[in-house]
Length: 455
Image (tube, rainbow, N blue to C red):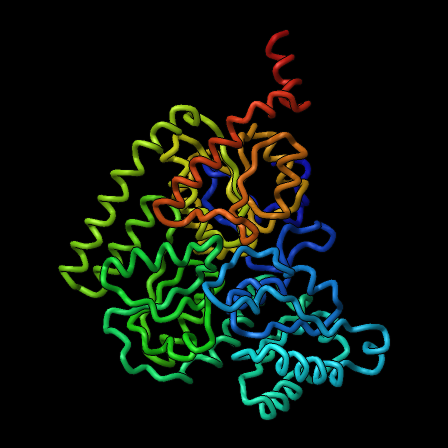
């Protein structure tokens, strides 16, 4: 194992093929001082709730926390844009000493009167948890005055990791579900959970489902609307993509409304097709199954020749990935294989023991599997494995570029749709563009390697 790995983290890293059974420690607090790549509780809650576009999102805390969400997410809306504002109570030293409840009341009254939202989410930050503002009481008071749901999201950053934020967001959304009418909803209907409509991806998936004869009742976490969430319990099935973010909500709806769920992925050719077939199998409608087969056949017929052309250049290249949830990594490994590439490092911020066991199963021998990594570890493995492209998010981008490695943004900041069959083509083109860029030949690392080879 590399010397840069802290001893306390040695059980969170595994290399497939080692002469020992697979076992990885995960879903625990980050090691203090290790500068984890993982995001906080507040971040986790904002990721899930942000795409509800006609709701007010007010951050109760210092203005710095609001900077995190100021239009850096790629979740698009087909209508209202209220989610793209970043409202904050901007707590100051005086508020910390005397409390910020009055300030929160004033902010909610002013913002609700000005923007007329369908609901309001109020996010608790670290400092609010420390000073003890009774945010729930303030929300109840304003809800009674304004006549709209005003929901506290208990997301103090210090009290856990990003998964705790997911759970807080699911509990907040559960308060809306069940409050709307369900008349007229088709028996062949679904809700989309864990898809965030990055660059319009939810619209791609909705188009596929509608071509199969399936009604989408609510894009719960993508192009979301409060009214859709309120009637989401009338759908026949929940499709859960990002299981780490929304599985808790799916389980709540199964418990409270009897709504079954399927885990799906819309990334890559294999998993996208499988998701459509699984939906058709669930409803047991032969006509729907035939439509799914026709859709997949048509899309693959147009896609494969273009992928195979890109594969000619990419064959044998090496990829690394560090993503939020491990479930995404399964699809990415298959997508890279289709392009002739090998994944040599796969890590996540919030994977569970079950996720990592599946990740180990689908990985090639020699792949490094890592939970809750830090920049030093990632840099070490990227160099050791001589990676050609690194897939990650905003925090991983500078690591790749500083090392002179190609990068693909696969997180919530991206502006390019990567889901569905057209998304696979976008992904392949982006990987090809960055891996094959001539600029990497002139980076110090590559130049040194070339010099060694020539000597």
